[in-house]
Image (tube, rainbow, N blue to C red; front, side, top):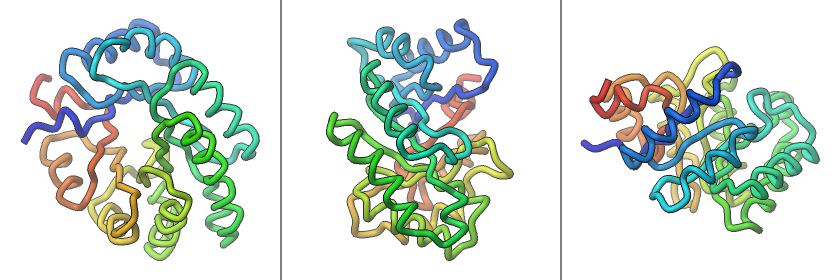
Length: 217
């Protein structure tokens, strides 16, 4: 199976250098990945480098903890939009989710979704499945779908565990029948890992080991 168009080619390390950003951009262009996923600081540079290619620019919002205020998340999203981003991957307020304050979780997500969609951008919502119970994964996914977000996403890759097949299956079941798709991210290192996530219902993969997954590393 060709995984290229499933892949958000990801570089979110805090010590990522400009040279490393240049490398992932070139790899994404050469291999026709779906996006380059970077931190907001690198959006303007990445957008410019990807102009005229079939690769989109994506960045994270409220990353990696999701504990920023909604106002800051919206401002960060708008800044990325102004700098040319195509896709926004926001982290939900995990603490409020664990507190059972579902209205606050929904309002936080909705604000970023509305800002993104007003500019015709794709919005994904990271729910950090490793910190949630099965019931919370289902509930969080349902909330994400209710906001009209384009994707519910499993993980930041910065917590205790990345995507699991079980988690992706729960997310897929929760958003079935909606317009929200599923993105698996974190801990996807091999073609077998990638295939397992797709089989579980993911239609997008967030990976930093993209070259290994497509057999070029």
